[in-house]
Image (cartoon, rainbow, N blue to C red):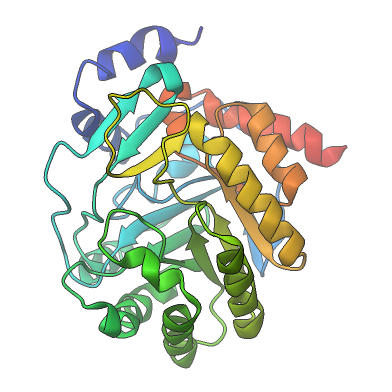
Length: 327
């Protein structure tokens, strides 16, 4: 058992989940927290060199406050956000729930963030040592029919700070957002972003709960726009292997998400063999990360598994993937 799992995690877990998250963010932002050295396994994709294929998923560093420090924890890249055009407080608390026995989290955060302008001002002063992806979402106050302009504002404001930009149309915690995964509204959003910048690597973050037509439609849109790829997947609104006490609202992440996320990844790898897929959802071990690569991912992202696994988790994944990719 590691020091984190034996001592630090029990201390952090005495706090409610959101307070523990905020304390962890302050520790990372201080610059004094470091993980054991992670092996270098450079991966070059869409013109960007990633020191290793393990990244921090969106949702942890929502406002990009620690972009200068994530490399110290072994990450090969970080995805910040989701950020919206307008600053917003998110949903009422409590809105983050732990399930240690299931190695799971349920969140109904609702894109709480300081807004695109505040993030841009912060990134102007930053000097990150690893590639930074920026995940953009729709402001809650913006009607669905005006979504394209809402995303366009954030994209225009932030794109020059990003190695890649992710269009998040799959969070279950903003009313109506998942409807933007449908072919017509997603096309409108991407058309508007391509008008602003036709070269910036663009990804779409998708839900694991798509029906067959949803998979086909998103794959067609990716081909039509020549997107760099997909982030597969977001949290699920279903509750596989969860206790009856689990909240029915919000998105489920962690180990119970793994089968759904892996299935979605395999489906998209079959439909889109020539684009970059980032595998995220349910990675709680090195074997889970290797499985994502075997299913077609070029990069992986972690969040919940890292919350439970601690400082040794990312270097262990990188080491395992270095061996796997070398073979």
